[in-house]
Length: 509
Length: 62
Image (tube, rainbow over all chains, first blue to last red; front, side, top):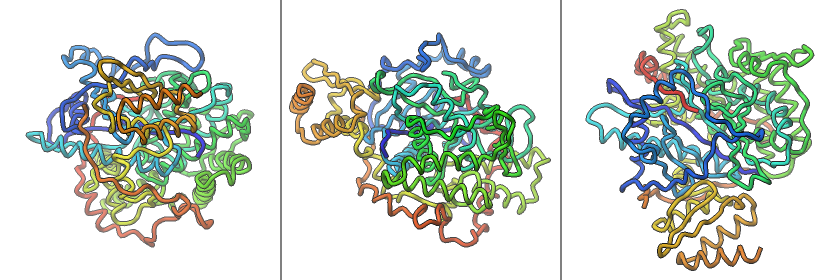
């Protein structure tokens, strides 16, 4: 496709058989299991500022919920230094793997291909699983279990964030206008499904989405409390005069390869529509309530109220975005056409009978599993103990252990649609996606790792003979710069030669 | 320096046009399993600890 994108997934962690678990230290220990030697902190935190807002200001601090404030007070007493606790690693495939405070997080390198993104995302699952096995081997008792989900069913949510590079010149108001109806309704195919409701009435029912009920405001910079449908964090990791990074926090973590590709693919096309100023023009009366109501709607009609009062279905809204995208972008490239075709067929099947999408959509597959189990065991939604057992099945759907997880049992039976082969996933565990600066980052580390002094998404500092050379990767979001820099890296035998070639490229601009 | 796990390198992903679902007009079709056999699934699901979710407590993330 023609836009850079990537996924950041926070994993849930627990130890079966342990009486208590310190999730902060266990997350650190899990990340450390990736390495075979001592940890050397290389991540450059000076380049990060999550408090800068797209709307032109900087906040003093980010919001935390009450629970977390208490935990943070205890965290301040920890003796482990900040960098040690974070344990930031950059992997040869260009990804960042680290302890995002209390959750191991795998953030893929930048991709231009949906199918490469799926392979990278699945590679992240495999790496997390391998680390869990290694950590288990080092424990006296218990088994580490890792879950690619978004909730503990008790009001604590963690994210699967999407990132899309966008044109800075597009007015932020248009971005919000274009995203709200799309995000409120995208869950009808992209939701991961959830047993139960964690807030407000705690109703015993099956929701489409794990995350929908955790969103409270339209737009803000926060990500952990009073979460916004549109996050305004202003960290483009590229030239801030030319680009912004759309940081999407509203989605679920998907096990389904098909849904990962469709979720990101449709969002890329909507970002294209926003930039082209070709939006279908829907305005919902209350986007936040609409998103929550769709998640809870047991009729699957998914009706929402527009400004002016007219009701419209989620399928109709999605179809309007699809038609706009088709008229603007059909025939542009093979992946765009794949998304257009898959989007249309998805909406047709959702309108006809969502349960036809067992094996494709996560929420449908999970609901089918839970319904089958309830029927088999005579479980009731009215019995809290039964609901806990259903939630346990929900959780196990997301277990990344391929010998234990329910998703992986279905996959092993050939019941899940797949887009990438196991060989492609295995390759993506060490190979970066092609044609982006993820290749430069990963290969640079692999080839000249002993000389890397620090690293971040948009800068690598190399050290040679006590002299530091900072390579600014902000411009490596432009295809010609990426091609030249990646070629220089491939062609250079020594660090001196490599730095000389980069200097020549820069001098000839 | 980071000593990374070495994984076997294999071929790059094939052309996305060959990836089936969405091609030929039938869209996101399910794999060729007419009616999933639920016996193994249910057997596995019965082994899931009924209290697994009750014990599973996390801290708020992003």
